[in-house]
Image 1 (cartoon, rainbow, N blue to C red):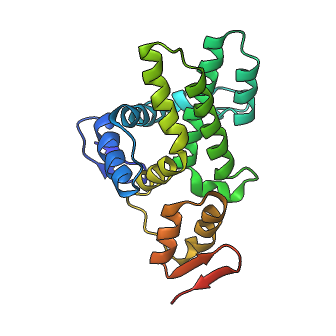
Image 2: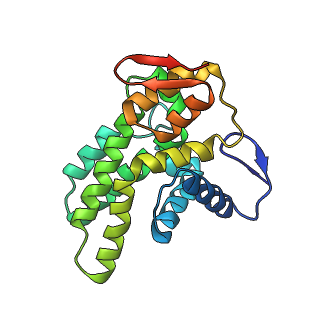
Length: 209
């Protein structure tokens, strides 16, 4: 027995299998369009960060997720190319996971989901550009390039995984509209339509009840 992303209890042989099946279904629904290597990479992130000690860092104030700006600074100040790549990978991975699983909680914070999407996408893009030109390096670069290019759709897919048992209501409209305005999320647009709202960028929100 494992606890699912939205708090429901599911029976699975392993957490990795649960995330693989859930993400694959969400990825197909959101038309993410990544290959098996990139899919496996995302599943590894979900499995790894399901353990709090992998996501949070110990601080005097208790476990905290290191600010993305600090992660970027670590990458820029890294003493070697290998260390820089490791920092960028951490930045991309944390950005993707947090944007995918904590998007609704950003409504009460100054830094929103679009910031995480920009930081994570740029981190993966930098990694893709700096991988060695060897055969293995090109293979890894291809994965990072997909993650960078499809970051928004990946976030939509992870949002779907995290809310598998969550039912959206009219109370979610403003937050969904805000996410759509900031990120262009197809998923947020679709849910708004299901709630009877047709969002329009220039003229506000058009209610289509």
